[in-house]
Image 1 (cartoon, each protein chain N blue to C red):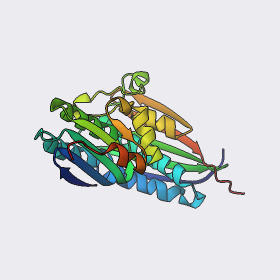
Image 2 (cartoon, one colour):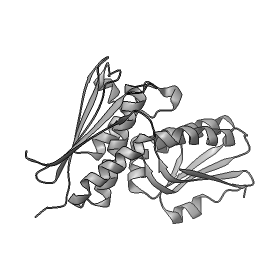
Image 3 (spheres, rainbow over the protein chains, first blue to last red):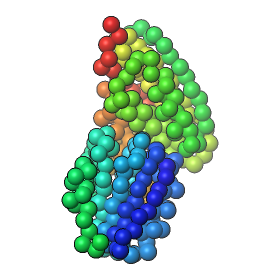
Length: 116
Length: 145
């Protein structure tokens, strides 16, 4: 799995691509947590558009990011249009931790950070 | 129900084998011409079951995980994932959504829920100290006739 960070002022987009399973999630979790723990970001978007596979490891990965972000007062957004990935997130009530964006147009509307 | 094809795959409880196992599962059922949705659901369920064996069954130790698959008549796929690890003390508790014995490792506790949702049926057999066996079935929509 590949991780790409894109920063604009105090907003951070985390692009995840490839396959996200338990094996990949362990290293990804630490790398993302290290980035978020700088405390610089008011808004964080997990962009999962490039994921070709995800199991429930994705829940733990995003939930951990939400936990780290909350320490610094950051708000977390999550973007995926994949119906199976959305199903996994909603089964775990992830909409209570993060704003889930499920289509590209909605992403353009919601992901207009006042900080950008 | 008549078995039209079957396979058995044994591999070490290393996390890099999660990907290997789900790709093998997808390749095995490909002659049935599953839909993309069915393929994703089966790959996800296998990944969850294998991860469960590696993380909870063997818990950092190395053992053997066995993936068995059978193609039954009426386009039904039967999948068994078994380990000889620690076993589960309370199966019903383990199957509850969001229940995890490893919250410190950010485990979501959603593995069994995902397996139950993506497959038609799932049963768990386990004996503490002896291991766990997860049996799942799914009937594919595609009609062989």
